[in-house]
Image 1: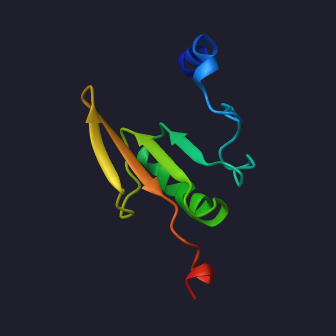
Image 2: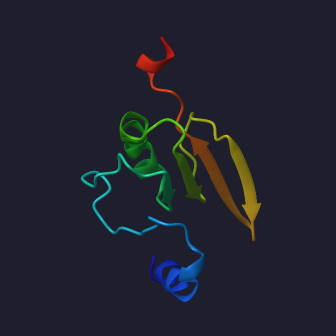
Length: 99
């Protein structure tokens, strides 16, 4: 995260309004207003976090994970960047919104 924060500080004039990095406990942080969540976590942590992401994030929120997937939740897109897998998911409509 330090290199990411440094990059934003260096190129800060180009980042969107409201953009911020947070360092928090993943399972306690208030994530409901996030529009993008970036993860670089081991697979078992991704799987533990997945139900919370699906429950608390708004439909349309994007999740990006470097190197590790989310088990049987198939990504919308998977690319290889400099030899590293990057996965993208979009939070689907919540169950009650589909009815």
